[in-house]
Amino acid sequence: MHAPRSTALLVVFASAVLAAAAAARTPPSQIIFPIIGPAVYRDDFGEPRPGGVHQGNDILAERHAPVVAVEAGKIVFWTTSASAGCMLYLYGRSGTTYQYIHLNNDLTARNDNRGSCVPGVAYAPGLRDGERVSAGELIGYVGDSGDADGLHPHLHFELHPGDGKAVSPFPWLQSAEHLAQPGSAPVPVAPDTTLSADQLLARGIGRMLPIP
Image 1 (tube, rainbow, N blue to C red):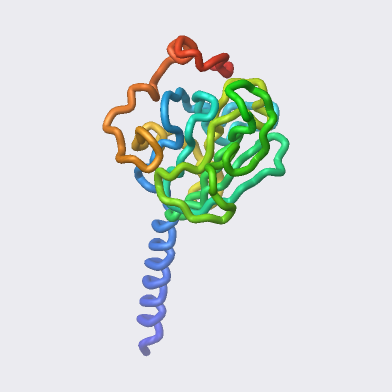
Image 2 (image 1 turned 90 degrees about the vertical axis):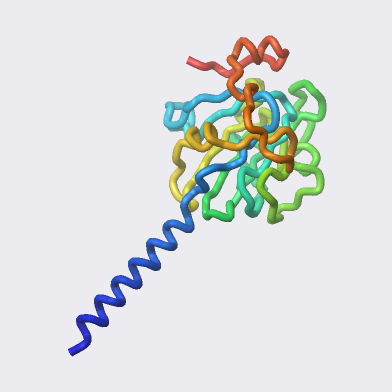
């Protein structure tokens, strides 16, 4: 006689568990901006590219600019993609996966391509594959490795909620906390992140990627 009530309770309980699991895999409402220093970006997610639809946002910055973890999580190096070049995955504590692509492979201030995808060049000195990092911790450096070689140094940044399909990271970048240096307290205002292409060129950052 009590079976229908028990079944209903089980359904309610299962729904609550599934809802909690889904909530636990939602990206944070606010992340740390992935680059320290002057940068410029726009919402180019979904634009057609030679290799297919663009799955992230390109953030233009100075060569060797520090790259930080946008949230706490686990780092995994990826060094075997000819198109991505030096890259890494950040498996965030929230369940979100972030991809950092085209990290540095230059040993000088020029595009020399003499470096490799190792700590101290592409990745932060001493960083180990599989290591857990804190939000805002230094994890790498901006570059132009892979099929970005010869273009303006930039970070191709992807955001995958629940380790699923990519979504535009632009809203998170717009509301992100900016750091003055890796591991520092957030900076309330970061005017350099809204520099125009001409302003970046005036600072000597170099040739820009095409921006329609």
